[in-house]
Each structure stands twice: as C-alpha cells, then as structure tokens.
Image (cartoon, rainbow, N blue to C red; front, side, top):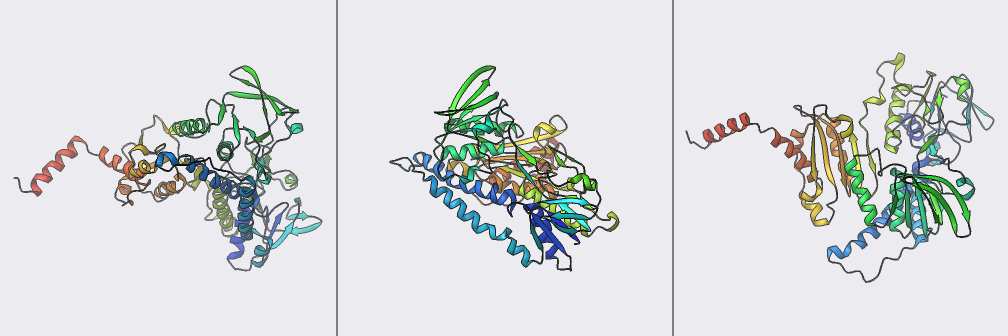
Length: 479
C-alpha cells in the first residue's frame, strides 16, 4: 500500500477519502477496530447535539411565559422517544462513514486491531499489510476517573450514556469542563435532577472567566446544583443508590444518586499498536508525539486527530488530516510541507448560550499592548427582542495596529457567529474593514459590527477630529 491509515474516526476517514478522491492511482488501506465514524458519529458530536436539540425545546418552553405565551402544564419529556430520535438520526448519518462507502472509493477496509510488527509492516487479525507511509488516527476515549469504588458501583461516560432508554431521576456529573457542562444542562432540562461536581472554583476553567460566570449563573437558575472546589473521595453502592463521599471546601459530605456520569477528559488510544516496534514515541496521557508537520519520530509514519493533538475537536481532526495528506503524499524531500501551528482553530462549548472562541484568550495577552472590546448582548436589538441578552462579543486586538488576536462570543448561536472572526483572522482582515461590512438587521451578529464600530471610534483622536472638522467646513462651503 502507498498509505495505510489506522483508525476510522474523523481524521482517518478524511485522510483515506481525501487521498483516494484524488484519483491518481494510490493504493490505500483503512483499518478500524471498533466502529466506523469514531467518537464524533457514535459517542460525541452527533448524539450529543441531538440530545441538546431536544433539551433546547424544553428550555424555550420554560421561557415562554416571559414572551407572552402561557403554558398550562410543564413539558412532558418522553425519554425513550428522545433517544430513539437520536439513534435514528445517527444511523441516517452513518452512511457517510460506512465500510461500503469507503470500499466504493477504492479503499481496502480491514476491521480489527492493527499493530506494527516492523519497518513497513502492519498486521490486522493475522493479515499482513505492507506500507510506504502510515497514518495513526486511533483517537481517544473517555478517561477513567481514579476514584475508589467507582468502577465497582458503575458509572456512565459519553460512550455509554447514549445507550439509555430512560433517564435517571438523580444524576451526578463529575467534571465541569465542556463535556460535563453540555450534558449536565441537557439532561437537567430533560428532567434529571443534576448535581455537578467540579474540583475548580468555577466551571469551564480553560474558558474566558466572564463567559464561564454566565454559564454558572444560568445553571443555578435552571436548578443544577453546583458543588465546586470539591474532591470525590470514594463511591459505594447501597439499596438507595450510589453514595458519593466527597469533601467540599475542606468539609466531608456525602450524597446518594441514581447514576453517575464521568466527564473528566480524554485518554489517547495508544494501546495495542506496538509503537515500540517502529520507533514511534508516545505518552500515555498525551498520545503519539509529532512535530509541527504531524510526523512522528518515525519519518514514514504520521498521526492526526485526538491521538496526538491538544485540539480534540472533529473540525480540528479534519484540518489536521488535510495537512497529513499534503505532507505524506505531496512533499518530496520535505518541500512545501504544511504546519499544524499555521491553523487558526475555533471551538465551541454547546451549552445554552454557547461559548465560542478563536485565537488568543484575554488571560494570555493581558498587559502586552492589547486592547479588549466587549459588547454585551443587552445592547444588541435582536438579542433584546429574543430575550437572549445573557452574553457578549469580546474581541482582542493589537494596540495601535488593526490586527485581531482572538475573540470570545457568548450567545445562543455563538458557534455560527465565531466563523466571521475566524475568517477575519485567517484573511488578515482588521476591525476597520469589518466595520464596513453590512450586517443584516436585526441579527445577533450585529454585536460583531458594534465591536468593529467601537474600534473605528477609538481612532478619533484630537488631531483626527480637527482634520475632520476642517474637511467638513470646506465641504459645506463655510470658508
């Protein structure tokens, strides 16, 4: 094979399909040991957003009174139908990632555990695949919390919670990162009593602190019990449920719940690959080691996606896969290789409202000649009339230079809005040009326009005003 790709998740599928789709006679093999489509299709983006979509309907119904719509009874959530819808839509989308589709592209698909046995050789279920170049795209899995008694008592992760047909009455969520927050809010709206444990002082510690504070306040309003600065000591099973023993602000406490959901991060799938046989270095917690060209310590083997990247996003895996195609197939002697560090990566936490970010954070650039423009949604007309004023547009730019360094948006559809800022950063478009872009009125995207206008007003120095005053007098004939 010219190329053997190990892993049928987003990164592996994009590498294989992209290379095959060039139609230049490449012989390609794809290996998957579990489910085609990887985490995104089976346990991540697709099922979680289905559940979030259902939960948003409940959230809107609960806000109906404020919009003049009387609701005579609380919404009735049918857990079985919610989950049936999710599984049906997931099955519909799965055709895009199926074995049959990739075979039609001319790719040889092997199902089973792949492992390296020597230079240029991979084995899959007693079949030998010889390769010129290989790509490791085995992804990551839900991290297992090291809490005494948790394994015995049993718990859910994002890989198992979507198999439920009924929702637990009382659900403890361990972890206040993106996964924990998204699922805590969704299942809370769908009728579960949620207790969220987090070992930090506030939720979403990697996000903008103003953004995280908004989400915290909304969670509290929606009845989610937040136990911050907590440490779970152990879990035990009892007749009444699962007993969580924990310390909160240094004080020992306990709580009984029906089910536990662990959302404490991801662990790379490096086991079973026999990477030592081909000199590929890796770390059990960070994954396969790669350089900026996504090349491993073996120059004939590359990696992409969650197995090697800090950006654990589907769109990040897709973008990295495109770099791998270029660097493995079309960069002889290393000429013209693409760099991972050249990517401008946006991401979204799909709470309601969403938090979207791109570029640098305010905490990373504070005090370094950077200005921050913040437009609260409370001054954006569309947000006001929709009753969605809890949020903001925050843009960071270089002082004295019209260059956008980063942005955070908190809004109902922040994930849709952030692409405008990402495009501006990639295209080196400053706020001055964005101010000249006509935004439809009324939309929440007008918040970006207001930020750009705010930048333009900051350019009105005393000397500039004098010049404009002279031009105005000259133009209207007052000389």
